Length: 617
Image (cartoon, rainbow, N blue to C red):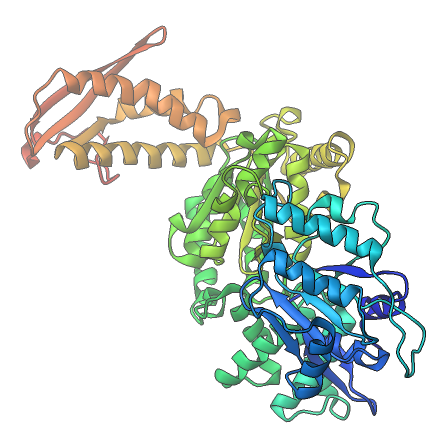
């Protein structure tokens, strides 16, 4: 294995560039060929020293805005070389004093090779586009110094002249004034990337020594290292070192490193997916969920299948890298009012024990492109940047949750692009540069696409075919985002129209809720005569194309409104019984006949009524 590419680039161009701006992955550890075929991990400062020392560099002069000047390595030879170049130096120089030291190194009077490393370069200027006078003078001087630096010739393996480099370490290229590097051939910009899979695999094999394992001789250990490297996708090599330390502290062996990766990424140890009772809860859900989401057997069955897959950790198991993807992805489609949101709540209650554990975003609020900042936060420099995004903040706070994106087709196409990274890699970077992981979340998208192409009475197979065709056409032809549809795969779940039998059950449930609310609010019982009940049922279930939501709206118009009008005219005493004995409609106005009296057994009659508990008399 050779040196990292950015080191080879820097070393090869010392004769033509006097300054370098290194940005990106600065705080990582890097793989370093330690001789004799050995590989080691070094931080950037140590790596620069090891790389430049063979070219005759006698020391690194390090400056940062906090600690000031110091010399690396910390020995007499390096200190002597620095003194020969700089003379007597101020340990904490001002920017004006720093220019003298930079000039002494870049235009040396002695034939001494050294490098000047400016750490924390992003912190020197308060704003790269709005410099203070002292900052402006400093960077102007550095720009000129880049063009007027003199190369140095020293004896050794590289006797040809090259510059004593000034190396800026900036978190982002834009943290330095743009005019410093733009069009300046003497300054070279190099971005340090995140480690690729090969680097992570090599690092995992090095770290396996902490577990007394030898991947070169043990195939199982080698496979565990490869799994560790895949799980660490998006992380730095330094993070892998920290994960290994975390695993050792928790007495986790080499084969349990994926759990340590999860803990490191999410910052939590209580994993609901690992609870032993969750499998039993999902099995119980095969009975409970159909009782809650009525008339949707196909949708409920497929949803529970995907949920079982998530519990077993098999979501995306067919892919080469699947560990970082969301636990489950569901796309609920179909006519309005058929139970899509209710099923999302049922899943949340099933897994997390609480309906409120789901996070809902109404995507009609994200129809403008700039509204996407609400999800991940504003970019640096914009108002509200430090607040972060609603989505990323919520998942960072609690990564174990159901996230519902309602009516996804109403979002701006550029906002939909943000979901590509979530669905593929299970992570998203917010406006502050923090990475948020979705690997333990369930994502649910709902859509009404294709609803206009289906009518009640069609068979489920035909409804499913038409709606899926409409979804495919929308993502491929309208949005030109076929890749997003591919990420959803076979997780599109189509809801059927509410059938008459299910509509009648929904009506009963909603009417029971109304009766219960009257009892809770006013401490009176509410009963409805059987004739009134039949009329109400007929009126409220007449238009099945509006689904359960339509039944609720009809109940509100035909029962709740006239009931409120009737009760408002009466002084109700706690313990009374309110009985609806008749109903009539004149145009859009409904009137109820209501009687009141003590709630005793003597007030009951032989007619069938519905009370607050849903029982019949």
